[in-house]
Amino acid sequence: MKIAMTHVDLPNEFKAGVANQAHYLANELVERGHQVTMFTFSPAYSECLYQVHQYPKFPPYLSKFKAFLFAGQLAKTNFSNFDILHTHGDSYLVWGKHPHLRTFHGAAQDEAKTAVRFRRRLYQTVMIGLEQLNAQVADLSVGVSQTTQDRIPLVSSIIPCGVNVRQFHPGTKSDHPTVLFVGTKTGRKRGSFLAEVFTNEIRATVPNAELWTVADQSMDGEGIINFGKVSLEKLSELYQRAWVFCMPSLYEGFGVPYVEAMASGTVVVTSHNPGAQEVLAGGKYGILAADKILGQRIINFLQDQDLRAFYEQQGLLRAQDFSWESVVQRYETLYQDLIDRFQKVS
Image 1 (cartoon, rainbow, N blue to C red):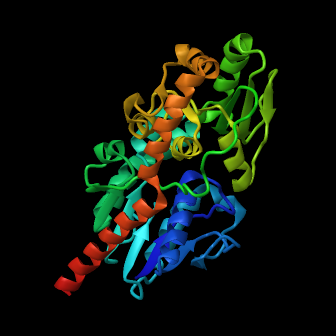
Image 2 (cartoon, rainbow, N blue to C red; image 1 turned 120 degrees about the vertical axis):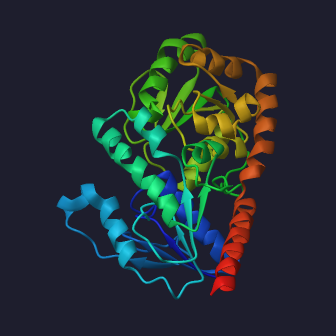
Image 3 (tube, rainbow, N blue to C red; image 1 turned 180 degrees about the vertical axis):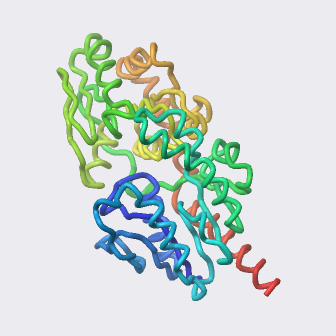
């Protein structure tokens, strides 16, 4: 198939979840013999197996309107030379371009509710209406979770996010208790909250425990080691070596880091949020904890090797459900069904 895929940026410029998902999906499709062109504001880089169509750069003072500028670029683009168009956001102006599949990686309604900064809350509130319009414009809408489908009724299929289980796999654990956090210090990821729990509760009970952070800002406290932004290889190593992974996020549309941790043989402890609820199957494959007992749940795993081993095995089983092979096969089926539908009416 000849596939046009879109996302406003790529991981070389913005390492957000959706940028990574679009990038890895495109690469996997190329490896399976498809021709993929990514339409984006970002330049191509060494990891891209697909072709990149880079839209012209815009003046820095317009950066706040990046998503809306991208929507305008998509509206002006001729995709008629492709078998199918697959968009990952900002497609509400893409009328009359078929066949068109749209993936929703969460819901603006939930993003707005849990946004910490006013500016982000306002943006996500605006996006609620545009999100529904996105679903109307597309010929087929896919959500990454049941929660996404609940918020956007026109979503008719659910395909979860993918994880490279070849990259993220079990390894040798650290010789001392370790908790890993991947996310941002502030905002809904709540790295600073975890650092506080670690300092006041976990470290007080398990004196040789360490908190490893892969975050945008450093966190202070005895036993906290800040790695900052790391390579994929280093991230994989940290997941393998950690005893427990915790990302106490207020909201996740899916929660790829939970799967990366499970695939690496690492226990997951997290706050209640829609993505975690679904990925962990309500607690079958990891622990969902209220804020007041989050620290104690982590301590339980650090002190109980048998409990840890049980959930490590549970997580490894669950992670296979999100392998890229499984995810891509499901997209290929939808692509072909949609292409066949339009060939019949043309």
